[in-house]
Amino acid sequence: MEMLILCIAALAAGFIDAIVGGGGLIQTPAVLITLPNHSVATLLGTTKIPSFSGTSSAALQYARKVNLQWKLLGLLCLIALVAAWAGSKTVSIVSNSFMKPIIFGVLIVVAVYTYTRKDFGTATTAPKTAGKEMLYGGLFALIIGFYDGFIGPGAGSFLVLFFISVLGFDFLKASAHAKFVNVATNTGSIIFFAGSGHILYHYAIPMAACNFCGSLLGARLAILKGNKFIRIFFLFVVAGTIIRFGYDIFFK
Image (cartoon, rainbow, N blue to C red; front, top):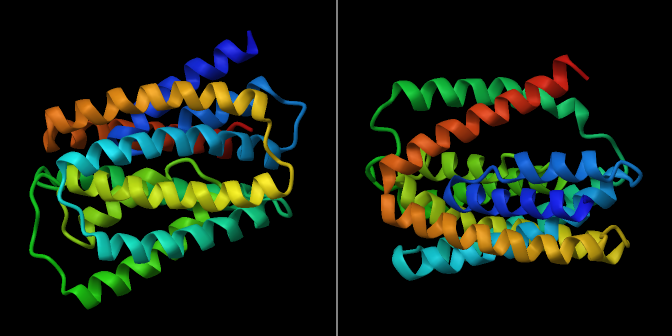
């Protein structure tokens, strides 16, 4: 029964994550609730294998259909990988609960802004210079990489938001680039968690297969439906993230 619940959660997480990020909102709570007798670090480590599987699947799907800036991605992925390793190491030592009120407030602002700006992410705006893209991207990759390794849920959505609001991408292009950076953050976390024995492989591998299948469906749907569909999905995922963190802050 535990395996069935986790596999269904992984399938749904892969589908959502492939479109706009936020699959951790389903997968992480499912693991924490279903397997309460293990440490938080071990449970977070276990979720990184299916997350990597699904995100890699989505990244390959997007790469076939979306024009990617490979030089920018190379820098961001390298920084994000190292930062995620550091974040995962930190979460094995200290609690991540103090960050939740901050994230809660930021997400409310993001939801209101995205909802009121109807053109947000539906078209590509004037691009930044290559130097500014590298600078802004590198700084954000450092922050989001550490965050994803440290706490996780919502990282993919924050990446999409960054690519749209700072670099001027549309939703489809932002989602495609976000997937590759997410692959890097998952890799960094897996390197730490695997090396420190914090992965339950008998749960992680079946979940990875389900996450992969969900991700295939989600990426294909996003590519087929385009920016307006992804924008609506983004709003739902952000709203779900707000509810999740609000519950953790006010009712736990």
